[in-house]
Image (cartoon, rainbow, N blue to C red; front, side, top):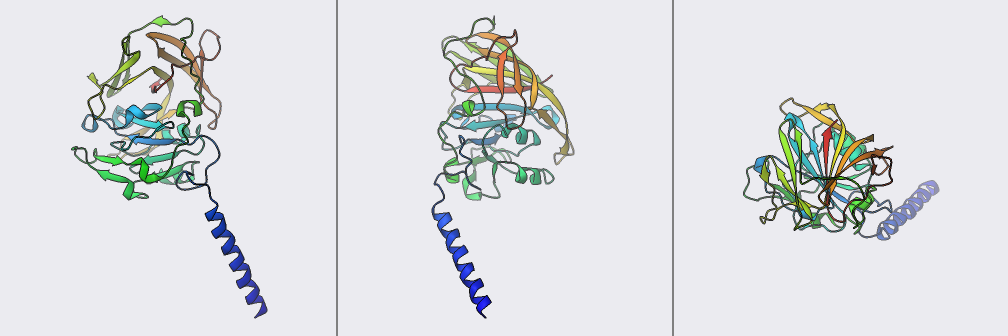
Length: 310
């Protein structure tokens, strides 16, 4: 009997400590777990087929990553740190490429519509806060006048505070400077081709940005404003078949973003040959001048990174 009373007392103390710990948990930590102390970012998987365009919220991202998916098509990942729009989308499913890519951030929040059944356990084990549609149905809605599945949108505010106000580019290890580095070659247009998708970036001296086109059509946001970025990076990586397939049986490509290789950095109407390096999954990605110079700074503002096959 005394032993049972002792167990009850210990249970009460443990429970009380748990309540206190919950009450003292810092506000604004990413959903799904405690924050790690590093800059918090929100990553959203965004649909990029014709039926999904124009997208909403891309203009507010610090980084827009473009990766190859099944059938040679493309999908985007918008990463927010400094500011978060009211709505982002259309939201689509995650891929294995995303897991290694996101390890360079401190336990980011990943919003996505879902994932292939065999991939979901890897997402659950990854150092990130996963908030798929099924886990936070109230944060997602159907709309935009598009057909399903291209009409799923996210209200980031419904996830709580997911960012810390630090640029996702800085968190990823990018360097920024207003003054353009020496060297480079004059360039006003750059096209990157996937097997079934195409990205073209045209330099606008008047705007001081690279205007984005996708599949030979000007890319705009939901309000009709042209998507544009001060810096575009073409990062050449290994693209190989992954262990996973989509619902149609097509193999999902895996872009290897850990390692090193060639890159092309576009800023201020010039193209700079560069080398990218990311020694480990937890490392940020650095870009240096290919001629042996030091770090290659990006122009302040949004950065588009397109993963092109070596």
